[in-house]
Image (cartoon, rainbow, N blue to C red):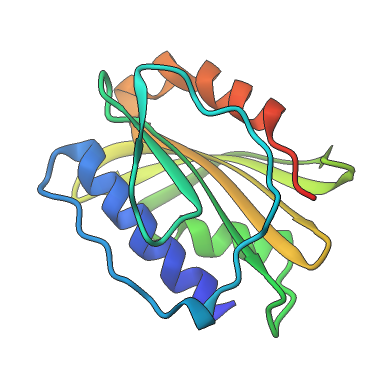
Length: 170
């Protein structure tokens, strides 16, 4: 679980840095032995204006050229610890200052219990919003995320909804 947190914090920090235009994205290569990503995941790549960005800390990530919003997913399989959905949610949201969870609801996703969370907060004093879809399947944890500057978040939420609808874990 500790590796998942570190990886997610690095990913989120990099993505939010890109979103906010604070500076260049920097990613840190963590040893691959620390995390085993899921194999055979299926999804529909987000349409333009989203473009894939290379980050070593996520399975896949896309950045909107128009708004700076991001869509990404992170998987971790065969870990030594089995965190709850709520623990994964809390760890994912630690990057936000002045955190306010707007909504958190349990649902079924990919045939498993899932947690969909909408939250807002600040990064370096800039208001941001995130939506997470977290679930576990076949000894893997999955975190699908959408984030952006608060005032531009809703303009592209439909792309994340389409991405989550197409996402299939083995």
